[in-house]
Length: 370
Image 1: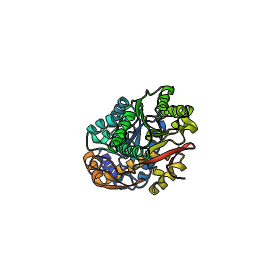
Image 2 (image 1 turned 90 degrees about the vertical axis):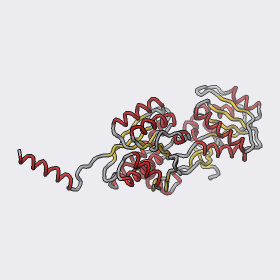
Image 3 (image 1 turned 135 degrees about the vertical axis):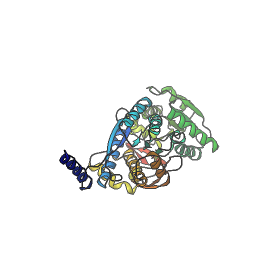
Image 4 (image 1 turned 180 degrees about the horizontal axis):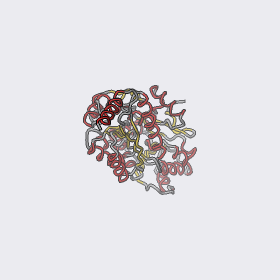
């Protein structure tokens, strides 16, 4: 018996001192829409998280411990997000890169905050996500919708102030919230719309809506909504020979818009954060993702940056406890694929803000670029 005890003690000692001995793993998660309408964005998030973990582990992990990834599908739905968040708590995750849609990010943040888990959303832009955050561990690696509204309001008031302006929204929280904010900025700058209308998401016939715009001799339309309806409205504008410029928010920066509207989409103006692919610090990661046949688009890079920032904060904190890591995120500047990133007291980051893109020949192009 004494021999067995000594042998066991020796084995423990060897496992502690031999190079390459097994160490504890740190579970983290990426949570987003992995299936359904927004699955392309979920695929980007997963690719970014996987690449970030591979690169961090190759460099020695976090505080000497390797990261392992849990992947969760929230379907951009509040109830599903809560269930997913509770499952991740049960799996002991220490950090979540997610969620994407505000309808999922906000309810999940309550769960994570109560469980002591840091959350950095790579794409939630709704101001309430951080303005009303339930605790200190909620951050975002994305600009805010009110920044988008200011950009759009200025464009409509200053560049299109001489046109008759229509404001359209799909009655969703995103669509109506964005158009309300844009109208507020326009009013501050002394411009008002000629007509404001809501339409029902899911309809497939917008002839009457567009005929109302034609009767009002509308020269520019600002639309708060999503690609299927926006594409149909733009098609109907072309059919009725309404030459108004269509201006919209970031939701239309997706192939789904072009697949519905086709060439009629040309000329549509979109506010969208500066493409991370244009940032020099992103080139190495983009190459690695593309060589692996994985998406290297916006949410791949913002998710990669979210994992980077958390990992560097956990190194600075010497652990993964929410209070210490949150303090490190509040106080530090982090080298990321997006360049140097810091967070304010609200949890908002200084990532590149919104600029104007224009749909041309099947894709959004930076406005004014050749």
